[in-house]
Amino acid sequence: MIGLLYKEFLIIRSQSKIYLALLVVYGLLGMYTRNSGFLVAMIAMYSLIINLNIFSYDEKNKWMTYALTLPANRSELVKIKYIFSSILTVFMGILILFVQMFISSSTPFAQQALTILVTVLITLVLYALLYPFIFELGVEMARIMMIIVFVLFMLFFIGTLSSMTLSMDLLQLPDPLILIGAILITLCLYIGSMFLSIHIVSKKDYNA
Amino acid sequence: MYIRLENQSDVPIYVQIYEQIKQQILAQVLHEGDALPSIRQLARDLRISVITTSRAYDELEKDHYILTVPKKGCYVAAVNTELFKEEQLKQIEALIEKATFLAKRINLSRTHLKELIDLYLQEEN
Amino acid sequence: MNSITVSNLTKRYPTFSLNNINLDIESGTVMGLIGENGAGKSTLINCILGLCHPDEGLIDILGDPGSLTLETKQHLGIVLESAMLPDYITMNDTNIMMKHLYQHWHPQQFFDYCERFELPLKQAFSKFSRGMKMKAVLAVALSHDAQILILDEATSGLDPIVRDELLDLLLDFMNTENRAILMSSHITSDLEKVSDTITYIHQGKIIFSAVKDDLIDHYRLVQLTPDQLEQIDPAQLIGLHHGEFNIAALMEIEHILPDYISRKPTLEEIMLYMNRGLKQ
Image (tube, rainbow over all chains, first blue to last red):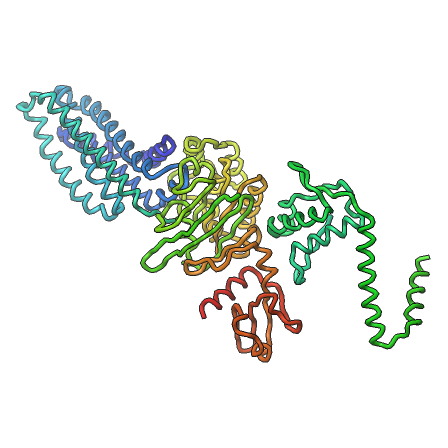
């Protein structure tokens, strides 16, 4: 599994310059517009871009076919995608949290952390919805759906979250139970999606 | 040891190999205890299948020309000089048959033929 | 002892099916798979590798029946025509990846192959030429104590010199006991060089599966005069080329008469003439 996971990380290295540049650009945008919605949306955006890129390359290189000639099986290959996506999203969340604290130290930490957490959860739910489609139809076919969801997502974030951080009324932290509930639901959706994807992939032919 | 495969011969390849190794053993070109190439080495060298060289070696072993030492390989077995003589005799008979056939064709007399044989035998001395 | 046994394999597609394939690959032998494009060679290999799901039949590899387990894959080295390493991976990365995938990965052996094949260690795979890509994947296949190599059109698109090098490597691989190779190619001269047995697939069926030398011992390519042709029972003509100035036929050696001009056919000729015969 580790070997396969390693391969997923490689694409970041090969495209690291682009990602770094994007990070800087959006970071500066966020700073100047005082709209941290940008930065937070970046968690989702980055994660999505990287993961979809990997899927794209995989399709072009016929990665599934090659990987199945190695000591790897279908369910492992699906699990790796889900594991990697979640690691990446959580990592981006933590990264953006630090960046945000540096930029807008006026807003309390708890608030920022909450926003980030919600973003991470929503991103994971997004993956849960998207991945079975990608595994079934391929990246290109799923792309249309992706674009729609992505645009809605961005609008939601830049629209609502930025107003959320400005409005102090929402300062009260929600009941911890709701938070835990949200995390559990997300996990259930995510893991459920994984099993659905495993089922899809086990039926497929990956001809050379 | 050297094998020459006749490309257009009707004799199956494994038989050609069998015959050539056998002849070399009987003619003492290959001596008792000499190591033969492995079936794989021989196959690779001759550009043929290991199954074919394996067959040839199996036949040679069956007829006691070679023996297989487990984990070591194939070796030339003790040569039976009687067998060698017998082989040579067979060949001589075949040649004489051909010679007499040709002689009859041109109506060569028995005496003339015998004279020729004497001539060649004498030359040896 | 068989390295691979295929029993009653059937795979149906809308326009093509692989029908009732039975095949044995004996340990210690190299099997060459020949056939026209679309005959079913790749489908057969895809089924053996579990890349596609057969409709019927059983595949047994190294005593492991049913779908390939991770354990069995440890002992397989596979080179396919178009599925390879990712674009952005380097040979160094590949080493790290394979180290964690294979129980018996030999880094030194891998790097030795990379050096021998002149593969740069830090360059992205996408920048390799086709020949280099093939060699890289083969280097991986040869560096983990594999017992069986499976190659699907691995030499197509390569120049004769590179092909010859690869074939030599395959023969070197076979020097160790109890190994086997299954390779498909439409370059019959390559198969002639390294195969022990040849299987000919045509439109999803096996036409013959035999020891290479037996095939060449058994058939003759005969040059005929029109009179001679008339005398022959058409059933004995396995394949016929009836040109304006020349008549040639593939026949079994038992049916050859002394006054025929004949010679041993090449593997390619056997395939071509049989194909003609099958079309009629």
